[in-house]
Structures are given as structure tokens and as C-alpha cells.
Picture 1 (tube, rainbow, N blue to C red):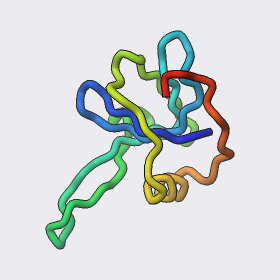
Picture 2: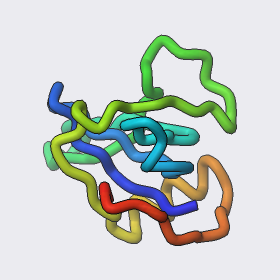
Picture 3: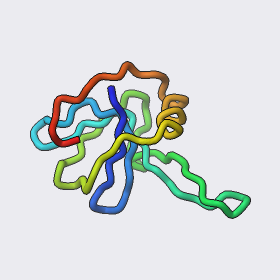
Length: 102
């Protein structure tokens, strides 16, 4: 599956495997993580992942639906984001999405 970052109308950014994006007006994401921006010890900004949603049971393979109207935009993340994500969830086979919503 391909991984994307979704920017939500709430301002949150989610990184996850897009399982389906043409399902009754929803994106279906597997293993979603929130993108967190924090200041490092050197004072420089760092990026990390946090559970998403924060209070959901965090199991590998967890899936969530996000309504199209909750997404401001989506994009393919930079390679370092994908590499860090793969370290957590393992390698995936890439497939092309069959949707005009990406």
C-alpha cells in the first residue's frame, strides 16, 4: 500500500498506509500515526510520530476511516518519513491507488 500524509481541517497531520480512498466518501488508513513537532535538546525542531487517535488501542494493522470533507490536502511524504514509518510497521508492497482523491 502507498503511504500518504493527510492534513485534517483540525490542523492535525496523519501519516498512514492508504488502504482505500474511494469508499463511501472516506479514506481508509492502516497503522495511522500523528505527526508531532517538538523542540530537540539542541533547540532545533524535530519531527516524531504519536499514536493516532491518541486513545485508540494501538495494534499493528489498526484501521481508521477519515471522511473526505475532513481532509484539507494529502501528499506523498518525503523518503525519511517513509523510512521511519517502515522501521515501526515493516516494509509494505507498494500499489497504485485507484482514486482521484489523492
